[in-house]
Image 1 (cartoon, rainbow, N blue to C red):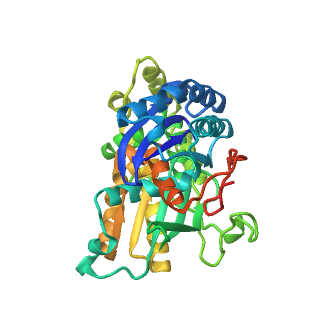
Image 2: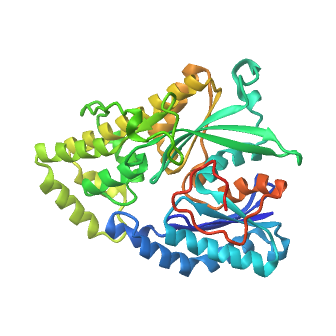
Amino acid sequence: MILGIETSCDETAAAVVREGREILSSVVASQIPIHSPYGGVVPELASREHLRNILPVVRAALEQAGVGYQDLAAIAVTQGPGLAGALLVGISFAKSLAFAIEKPLIAVNHLEGHIHAVLLEEARRQVNASDLLPEGRPPARPALLALVVSGGHTHLYLAEARQSEAGEPVWSYRNVGRTVDDAAGEAFDKVAKLLGLGYPGGPWIDALAPQGDPEAVPFTFAQIKAKAHRKGEPGALDPATATYFSYSGIKTAVLRYTHVHEMEASIETRRAALAGLPNPTPADALPLCDRRTLDLIASFQRSVVDDLRRKTFRAAEQFGVDRVLVSGGVAANRELRVRFTAEAAERNLVIAFPSLSLSTDNAAMIAAAAWPRLAAGDFASDGLTAEPSLVLGGAPR
């Protein structure tokens, strides 16, 4: 059993997972009420809340799992990427705990954790990838394409597994796509804030979008050239095969649309009305949204989802994969799941999403990603520290 600890952003999480597949407990302390008044995460407040929550959250995870510290085989913790102060809280606690109970410490990349949120549930169901493929055919290659899409990340990874001496799959990752500015989830948050809706913005837009016309406002995306990242930089992509995402432009387009159609007064009225409610929900916002606002929300969501869909499946075709995984907070978006699933069916591909509880940040995915490292004896050194810009594929220190 591995105790996973996750504090990369604004959720303090701990979980106990057995052999990378059986979740014995998963506890998450959310900071949404703390950051909602600001419309985004305030790093200093996030760090303080992690300090307040880390011990009770870990104790609750152990209690729910019915285990003690000595029953654990290892402690796993997120090393990065994320907010420096938030990461340091989890790492400092995990290092101290591992030292005190004399258990190995395993460093995990947060992005790999999101991929393992899907792999964990496949393992729980004992799903064999070839069994899921149409006509029972074997996969063309033992690789899959993973889209990690959240508030801080929009990345595409070509992931490939090989069997270790211990009999467990060891995964390697090649970054083949990423955003050059705003991540998709960040765009959802910023547009929701711009329109006077709540935080985090993704669930609000997801709930309100079905009430509008997704074809009402035509948004376009500019072509992004490979020169956006110079070859040879840390984590640089191969310009011949790279996929680039960009969502700052559509955020600006939404802002200009509100100015052109003089929507500022209604936005401020909506913002003030929701601020006066103790726990506002999208249902409270619906009567405050006129037809133009709902059409704008629906068109924004459709455009972002379609951009993600087009580029992801184009990359899947480019690399000849049979499987596509979609993970991260934006993977909970209902329209994204519907449109990605339909596209995968048309292309005869397997597609998988995490359950809603494992889409957002959690520690079960960190413990699951640590399992192959435990089997291989790949432990963190005493000098482990936070890496806010950690690249997936680099070895944790």
